[in-house]
Structure formats: structure tokens, C-alpha cells
Image (cartoon, rainbow over all chains, first blue to last red; front, side, top):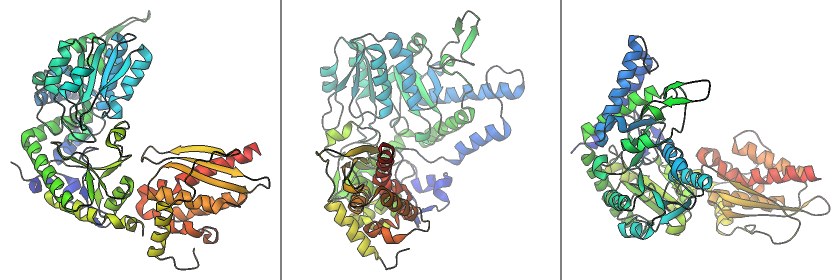
Length: 408
Length: 149
């Protein structure tokens, strides 16, 4: 096991004694984005300060080196996921990864009457692209019913039918933090002949992942939620699926040739989906991030988050001042409301105590109907979160009745 | 600047009063109302605002409805209170002074009455939007009112 206090020394945002509203910063919004360790910042700086060059078959050493660094990062990510290098596509993030499958696969293969199966707990980035594809193809959107906020195998079985062509769900929900039974789901989905896209934005940063073992067809995630830079993400796809799809973006770096008569030949995947100059600094940073997380150990990170979650639930319940919506979710997300205080007002109160939490619907605008509340406060933890920070949250929650004090 | 001392306790009381019992939180069913929808990408405030002028060019009724936090609820409700009886010019002046106060610029406190309770909103910069969402919407309705005549 690692020591979170020690880990904090790796993060400039944490070790420099930052304050917010006059209080030590307590950052509990890790489901939104995470802080970056020195190694990630140094890797990006190395590209900008010492190794700048465009990639793609250059004729000089700098460029050759940039190409090699990109492939070494691809390999590091593949290793992190238990995948093959050629199955790793660099994108701008989860949103672009899912759009790539929606447009590259969905738009190409879906027919009127086909079904795309989602859940109402999905983030906008795993709903909106499918809404658009449904509109363009005449396919329809269906939902796996949730059981107390959770996706179950039984719910999936009931929802699948011969029309279902794509199932797209989050491995870990971004509002409630429930972990979907992805491996069992993949088996059932494949038996019915559909493809399975897993939104891994809240999972890959927190769980050990073996893509081959999970057997999903696609896995999308972002670098910035796992100590990496913003603007870089990944689409993992089984190679046979990547070969079937159309490119979403076209242009330089993804074609073999094109001619005046408007015909062209694409490079094979993954380059087929990497049009334009890549976010090379982002790729350097992502490589450093996955190596950093691997060195700490994903199982250790998960165990740390689970113990923080149990502690937070215990302490928050003692206040008798909160409703908790996801007590039994085995991840580092606590979703709650302070009695009688609108979520946004609660988040402002927390801000006034130096605590960063998110309020609102967390981009899952359909879920509140299920929860019976318009908005919630979400505290989300990571490897550098400490029990002391949870104590600060609990102390601030106790002041809930004075939430307007934040303004005076 | 206000000429009297408004204490935090008084400001809290004003805001809590309009938050817990808003007078103007209603969707009117009568005729003659102009309305506008206002929502935000960075919070969940999502409101409709309604404005009706009488034959003499004065605000006869102003109201709002929707999902809103304490700050947007109270600020919208207080605005509706202040608007009734005002001409479009007076309403514009009021909104202008309020916005100056929120952004911590010199302002004419004599017209703001209970809206002075929001004088420290700048301390929670992320919530400035909540304190102005209703005010921005009314300003749009006033523009439309002028345009239509």
C-alpha cells in the first residue's frame, strides 16, 4: 500500500500549500479532473523544450524521435489496458472517442429500426452522440432499466432484442459511481450479436483494466481524469472493429494517397483515425501518467479510494444532516445533499471553506428523475485524497444551515 | 454606496425570506405577458421570466418560475418586487446599478432597496451568474418591449 501523504509530494498543486477562500485547498472533484504529478508536466515540457517536431515519417532525427515517442506511448497505454498497440487510437478525450465510434461505426452500419441501448445514468458524452446517430440513421434509443441506480445483468437481458446493434454504457457511473458488471454484460451482448462500447472515463483512472478479459468491443477514456494532460484521450477498439469503421476525421496523417478524382486510400488503424497533427505533448504526458499510476498500482489506488469512501459515508451519516444517494457504490464517489440546502448553495458553502466539490446534474441530465432530486453535490476522491480532507468536508457539512454565510 | 449600514444578518434575512417564500414565483396564465427562458451551462438554474406593462408604460406585473438555487431565487424575486410600477427607463437604470454593484464598481444604491443584500456576491465569483440570471432575462424583455414599442 502507498502513503497518500507521500504521494502528495509528487503533485505541485498539492505540495505548495495552495489555499482557496483563505482555507487550505481540499480538492474533492477528481471525477471532473485530476491534478498532475511532476513526471507528467516534465514529460510535456520535454516535448516543448527539447524534442519539438511534428510526427509522421520525418526525414530528420527530431521527427524520427517524435514518431518513436508516440509509438512508445501507444505501447505504454496498450500495456496498461492489456491490449495490443494497434488497438490504441489517440483522440482528444472520451467525448471524441465515443463520437468516433458513433460516426465511424454507427453511421455506417445502423439501419432504421435498429436499437442503440444506453442507460439513463449516462454522461452527455455517451448520450448525445447516439441521439445524433439515431436521428441520422432512423435507429432508435432504448434504455437498460436501473435497479436502485445500478445496471444489472437481468436489466440488460430484458432490454436486449434482435434489433439491438450497439450497447453503450459507463463502466463506472459519473454521478453515483456504481460499477457495471461489464465482463458479464459483454458475454450476453455478444451472444445477442450486438457490439459493446464501454465509457471508461471514470473507470480507467481508478480500476485495473484488462480489455481482453472484459472483452468489450470499444473502451473510451480521457487522460486528464487519470493524472494526465487535458486534450488527450484514447479509444481502444478490437482490431477487427477498428478495421470495419469509417474515419470520423479525415486529412493529413491518416491517408496513404488521394487523387484529383476524389478517391483516397486510408492508412490502417490506428493511424486511420488520427487525422491532423496529434496532441504530441499530450501523448508524452499520457505515457508518463499511465506509468506513474502503474508504479503505484491500480489495485492499491482502488483499495485506498474504497476505504476513503467507507470513512466518508460513516462520518457524513453521523452528522444526521445529509441524504446520501450512493452509499453502497464501491468507488470513490459520494453523491449527497445537505438537508434543506440546494446543491449549488451547498457547493458554494464548501467553496467558502476551501473545499472543491461539484454540484448539479454532473452532465447526466436524465438521472435526476430517477433520484427524485434536481441536483446533488458530488465529492470524488483519488490516490492523493486523505482522511483529513474528508474530515474537512464533514466539518463544513455541519455548517450547512449557515450556507448564506459564504456571501457575507 | 448605501447610506446605511446593512449587516450580514439583515442581508441573510432578506435573502432567506425571498428564498423560502418567494412572492413572484409563478407562471402567469393571464394575457399580455412577454416571457423569456434563461438557463445556464455551468449550473442548473433554469427559469422563465415574465413581464407585463400597463397602458401607461409602467410595469404592471413581473414574475418568474423554474429551478433555482437560493441566490437566483431571491435575486429574481427581489427584482420582480422592485420592477412593479417602474417605466422601462427606470427598470433599465435599476438593472444597470445592480450589475455595477455585483461587479464591485461604483453604483447608485438609492434605487436598489432589498437587492443590496447581494452586494457581496463578488466574494463567491462562481455564483455571480446566479445573482444576475433573472436580471439579464428582464433586460432582454425590456429590449424587446422597446423594439415592439
